[in-house]
Image 1 (cartoon, one colour):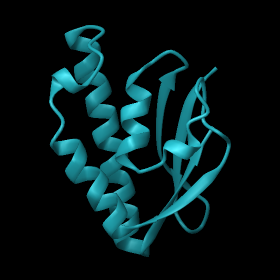
Image 2 (image 1 turned 90 degrees about the vertical axis):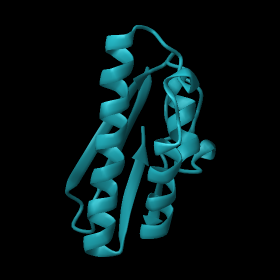
Image 3 (image 1 turned 30 degrees about the vertical axis):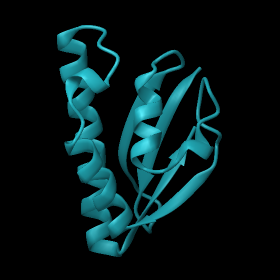
Image 4 (image 1 turned 120 degrees about the horizontal axis):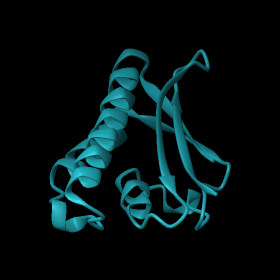
Length: 109
C-alpha cells in the first residue's frame, strides 16, 4: 500500500510522479497543498482524479514554499531533503504543464 500520485497532460502523457508509503504522515501535507484531502484514502489514494487550473497549482507551490522542515515528519535529514525535493519537482512539473495547456490532471492511486 502507498500513495502513488501521477500528473498527466491533456494527451494523457504522464508528466510527474510522487510516492509516499502507506504510513508516511507527510502524505497528508501533500494532499493539503492541492486541496485534495478527499482523495486521501488513508493508506493510499482513492483512485480518483482531479483537474487543476494554473491558479490552483500556483497556490500549491506558494503554500509549499511557506513550509519549513519542522512542518514535516522528520525521518532523517537526508530523507527529508530528498522528499522535499521530489514534492517540489512534482509541483513544478504540474505548473509547467498547466501553464502550457491551461490545466493538469492529478490521479491519486
